Image 1 (spheres, rainbow, N blue to C red):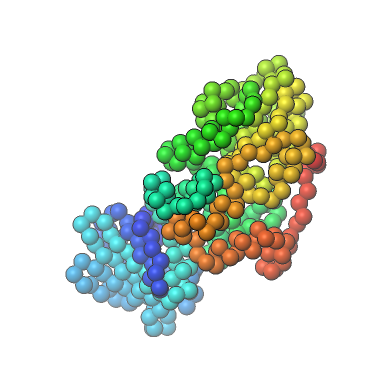
Image 2: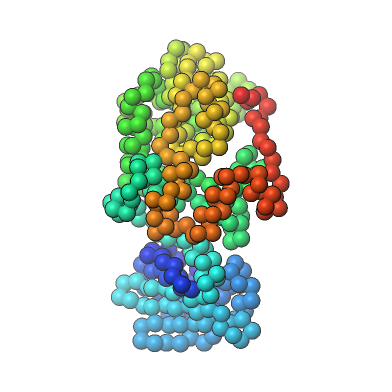
Length: 353
C-alpha cells in the first residue's frame, strides 16, 4: 500500500504534526506497508537523510513507527485504529511537517460545504466563489520543490499558481452555485446566442445556455483541416447579425478569445461581451477591450488571495501565499529571482491584437 493511495479528510497541520483521517479501517499489514512507504516518501520528497524505520510499537489500538536517519529519530508515523476509520499522524520537525502537509493536501477527500464557507466568510460574492474554488482544489499552488512549477504562457514561462475550473461538474452543488451566480450576473447582458470554446468551457456554456434559455454552440480550439468549420453546432446563416456572448473558463491574455471573436465576426455575427469564471488579471481585459469586447467575470486573483478567505479553506501556507503574491506583483522579477528565463509572450502569428 502506497501513501499516495490513501484518501484523507480532516487534514490538520499543527506545530510539527500533520494529522488526517482515512475513512477505512486499515489492516495491520496495510499499515506496515504504509509505514515503509512513508519512509520512502520522506526520503524522496521531504528529508533525504531518512534511511530506515524502527520496529513497530503497539499501544492499545495504535501503532507507531519511528523514521530514522543514521539510527536517529527524525520523525514518527502513528496509526490509530478506530471503529470505522483510521487516524493517521505524521510527526516531524516544523519545516518537514509543512512539506508533508503540502504533499498530503492533494489527497484530501473533497466534500464541498457551502454552508460552512458562508459561516466562515465575511467577503463579497467574488471572494465566496474563490473560496469554493479553493475548497474543491480548482486553484492549485506549487513552490517547485515537491511538484514542478506550472507551465503557463504557451508553456514557456512558469507559475506557482494554476486555476483549473474544468472539474466543476464533478461537484454538483458547487457547479450549481457558481454557474447560478454567473447566470444572475449575466441576466442584464443583451445577446442572442452563447459560444463556448473547446474543450474546457463547453460544459460551462451549455449550463448557462440552459439557465438563460439561449441557444449555444462552441468554437474549436483549432481547425483539424483547412476546410473545416471553426464552429460546431451552428450554421453560417444562423450566426448572421446575431449578438454572441463568448464564454470561457479563465482569462490570462485573451489571445485565443481574440481569434474566436474574429472568426465569429467573419461569419457575420458580433461579439461585444465575454464572460469567464476566473480572471487572472494579467492584461486579458485590455486585449478584449481593444477588440470592443467587455469582460464579465465572477471572481479573480484578488478575490482568491483575499485575507477574508480562511486558511482552513484555502489550505495555503504562509510561504505559498507570499510566493504567489510575489509572482503576480512582477512575473519577470519572480522568474529572475528563481534563476528562470522569462519570455515576453506575444500573440501567435495571425492572432495579433
